Amino acid sequence: MNATQEKLKVQLEQALVEAFGADFAGVDPILVSASNPKFGDYQANVALSLSKKLGKQPRAIAGAIVEKLDVSEICEPPEIAGPGFINLKLKTVYLEAQLNDIQADPRLGVPAAKTPKREIVDFSSPNIAKEMHVGHLRSTIIGDSIARILEFLGHDVLRLNHVGDWGTQFGMLIAYLREVYPDALTTANALDIGDLVSFYRKAKQRFDTDTAFQETARQEVVRLQAGAEDTLHAWKMLCEQSRREFQVIYELLDIKLTERGESFYNPLLPEVVKDLEKSGLLVENQGAKCVFLEGFTNREGEPLPLIVQKSDGGYNYATTDLASLRYRIQQDEAKRIIYVTDAGQGNHFAQFFQVARKAGWIPDDVELVHVPFGLVLGEDGKKFKTRSGDTVRLRDLLDEAVSHAYADLKSRLQKEERQETEEFINEVARVVGISAVKYADLSQNRTSNYIFSYDKMLDLKGNTAPYMLYVYARIHGISRKGDINFKELGNNAVLLQHETELALAKYLLQLDEVISSVEQDLLPNRLCEYLFELSQKFNQFYDRCSILQAEEPQRTSRLVLCDLTARTLKLGLSLLGIQVLERM
Figure 1 (tube, rainbow, N blue to C red):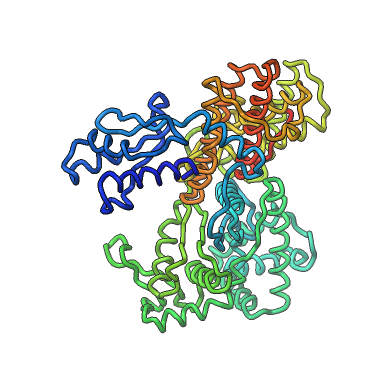
Figure 2 (figure 1 turned 90 degrees about the vertical axis):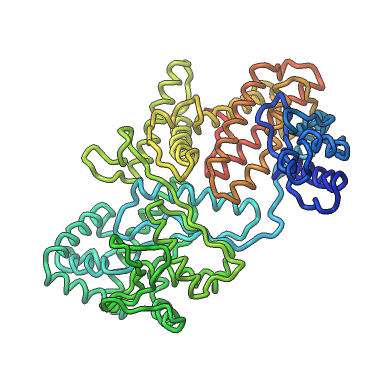
């Protein structure tokens, strides 16, 4: 809730008490943004909800509230509409004062969290010896944006990359490489990631068909878990080769992460099983140690168990996730733990969260959140794949986006008969290409699938990154044309006279409300929607109001509106992990 809405809510709550007595203290005035600007800016709907309790008509209740309501510093006189809506229209002088206040504020009026918390965002999480593919795109981009927003609000954020770097697959891969390419296990850079993936596939095929090889692979796992020097060295080499490739992608996307793989929690797994046994939750089922869950059944309708130790004594993802959860609460002292993974893992998170709660490992002040997301689809509406049917490599997808942006820019420069250096073209193509991919993902409600289309995401019109980057560049074009340094405008009074100035001003003042909502519901698309609407409102203002040719003091006031819009766009886009351009 933004500062203005908060003030109005407090005044409405006081008016309710004055009108109807102390019993109505704390009653929600149901204050919302007006659905139609012609009715005002906010609407209080509380009168309708109190009609039965008070035995009065809603309009009469609304009249009694308005009689006691003092919002004269903020709003025009309140109006009652329809069956009992209280409509509130912000005063122009109030809006001007608010904009004047945020001019000198680098946070543009967005307050830091009153009670900062230790928060963990678990995202990206690729597997060692496998290439990052389009399936990692959403986790990486959404997780980074959530982390950026929480950091901006002042929370102590730990960005964790829970990498798949342990388990049977390593025994399988090491055993195979010992036979066919032993140098890869002793020599740095002997393999690139593509070769490693190819060897992994061949090792898997062998493992699935050759029982003798299966036993060899299992022995390598035993050696790895026991810390055998040669196997451990081989494992470290494989991890390092994968890590280097991941880092190339993280640098392209400007993503910062702390790696803490599954191997980190391996020594903690026996204690997890031991503590579950102590709590009486463990049941032996066909040789495996399980916890039976409430609300989960198999196809036969029988209770579904979560296995925490397999019949052969090995552990699985659930055991590791339980160990990591305990560590994050006990050692990292996290108060909110956010897991950003595909929606298909929803049951897994619900299950191990339930086990942890049953075991009493989750304190009352700790919140666990699974942030699910949908699939990336091709333009045919099916799962996004290459023409040959393979999963799209993330590196290829990003390179292709930059190539498309490069071609689009070259074509535009030719039409405009503009000359630019190759360095300029390459930099703009990089920023636009990467930004387009990020924004296309973040602008969707994360719970939905979305269709990946280079043409749509690179369109200069519509709800795209290039559209917003263009608006930002347009504002800096105004400063270049008028030889204006926005930083030197100082604290000049904003004067709002034209209807498009008022619409833009009101929208600029909603940034804190939008960021606060994303902090709570972890839906970055709300910030995208806000920035798109802001860009549209700026373009309407730009089209209808003269700026550089306006008379003073209107000219400076409009330049301040330009500056505040550019700063809001830059801040908002930075929270989405998107870089801006002053020229395109």
